[in-house]
Amino acid sequence: MKTIKGKLLLWNGLLLVVVLILLEFSVYYSLKKILYQDIDTELRNEAMEINGFLHVVNNRIEFVNMHEWEEFEHQEVGANAIFFQITSFLSLNKIRSRNMELLGITLPDHPHSYKMPKNARVYSDVNANGYWLRELEMPIYRDGKQIGVLTTAMSLRNIKSFFNAILKIFMIITPFTLLVLVVGIWRLTQKALYPIEHISSVAGEIMKSQNLKHRIDIRDSAQEVQQLAGTLNSLFQRLDESIQKIKSFTANASHELRTPLTIMRGNIDVILAKERTKEQYQHTLKIILDEVKKLSRIVDNLLTLSRSDAGQTILEKNVLRLEELIESCQEELQSLIPPGEQQLHLQYERGLEILGDEAWLRELLFNLVENAVKYNRPGGEIFVRAYSENNRVCLEVRDTGFGIPEEELPKIFERFYRIDKTRLHSTEGSGLGLSIVKWIVEEHEGEIHVESQEGKGSIFRVEFPAVSYEEIAASYGKKSVRSA
Ligand SMILES: Nc1ncnc2c1ncn2[C@@H]1O[C@H](COP(=O)(O)OP(=O)(O)OP(=O)(O)O)[C@@H](O)[C@H]1O
Ligand SMILES: [Mg+2]
Image (cartoon, rainbow, N blue to C red; front, side):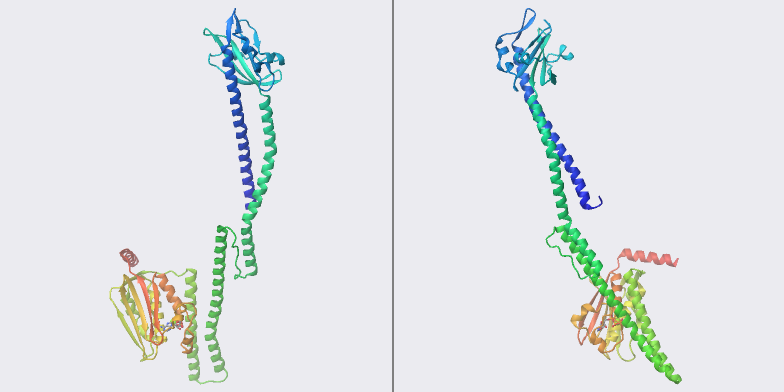
C-alpha cells in the first residue's frame, strides 16, 4: 500500500477496529459489573437477614420463626427467586430453602467454607445441577465459633442470556460498522485527495505540452490545497519568465555578435575583390580591429554576466580608499573623452573607505563614466564625486547630456536594453554595461539610484555601506598575512 489513500485506509481501519473492540469490551464489562453489584447487594442483605433469624436448639441450627422460611421468594423458582442453604457443623446436616428442594438442587461445598473468618463474604458463580447461580457464602458464628455456613444464591439465567444477546449484537454490529466506516473513509480520502490528483495531472499536462502559460485552477478546495496550487502557479510563472528571458538573451546576444561579424565580412569581401594599395589594406584592417575589439568587449561582458548568474565570480574584497581608486583611474577615464570635446571634473572627500573589490569597482566607474561621455552633448561636462552621507559612502557620476525619459528609467539596467533614441544617435554599445554595474553594486551590498532630466543630464549615484571597525581589522590582518 504505497499510495496515500491506501495508507490512510489501512491505518484508519486498524485504528477503528481497535477503538470499536475497546468500546465493546468496556460496555460489556461495565454492564456486567453493575448487574453483578446489584445481585451481590441483594444476596448480602438476604444473608444478613437470614443469619439474624438463626439460633441453636439442642445442638441444631434452627429458624427463630418460620415466617422467613416461608417467605415468597424462597418458595418460587422463577428468575427473581432467592435460594439459601445452611450447612450445620453441629448436626452435620443441610437445611435448604423450599425452592431448592422443588428444583432438586444442592449448592456445592467448598473446602474453604469450613474455616472462614467472621467477616468473610465469598461471592462466586457456580453450576448447581445444571443451573448457573451467583452465590454468597458467609460463616455462621455463635459464641466466637464457626458453627456452619450460610449460602444465599440467585439464578444467573437472565444475566447470562442478556450477555449472550449483547455478544450476538456486537458480533453483528462490529463488521457492519467497520464496513460502513471503511467505505466512508475511502470516500472521504478520495474527496480530500482529488484536488492533489487534479494538480498533479494539470502539472503533468503542462510539462507535456510545455505550455507554461497554463495555470492550475482550484478555487473551491481547502486552503492548504489552494496554497499549493498558488505556489505551483507562481513557480510556473517564474519558470515562464526565466525561459522568456533566456530566449530573448540568446536572441539579443546573437544579434549583438552578428553585427560586428557582418561588418568585418563585408569589409574583407570588398578588400579582396581586387588588388588594393597598402593604405587601403591598412584602413580596412583598422576597421576590422575596431570590430574585433567590440566583439571581445561583448564576449567579456557576456562572460561576466553568465559567471555572475552561475555564482562563479569570487570578489576579493579589501578596505579601499575611494580617492585612491579614483586617482588611479583618472588617466583611463580621461582617455574615454575625445580630445577637446568634453570636460571631466573629479571632486572627492578624502579618507572615504569602503569594503570592495578594486578591479570590479574600476569596471563600475569606467562603465558609468563611459555612459556619461557617450550620452553627452559636444562640449558637455562630466562630474565624478565621492562623499559620505547618512553613514554611507556615495560615488556619483553626473553628466550634462540628453538625459533619460522617466518611463525608461526602470528598464536601463536590463540586459541588452538600449533606449531607442540612443540608437538614433548611433552611439555604440550593446546594452550590457549597466547590468554589470548593477551586479557589482549588489555584490558590494550597495544601492544604485538614477535621477535624470531629459535634455539636461543624468546622475547615477552608488551608495556603499560604511566600513565597520571589524572589517578594517580583518582587512589589515589579510594584508599582513599576504605580505608576510
Ligand atoms: N548617462 C546616460 N545618459 C543617457 N542615457 C543613458 C546614460 N547611461 C545609460 N543610458 C541609457 O541606458 C542604456 C543602457 O546603458 P548600458 O550602459 O547598459 O548600455 P550601453 O551603454 O548602450 O552599452 P554598453 O555599456 O554595453 O557598451 C543606454 O543604451 C542608454 O540609452
Ligand atoms: Mg554603457
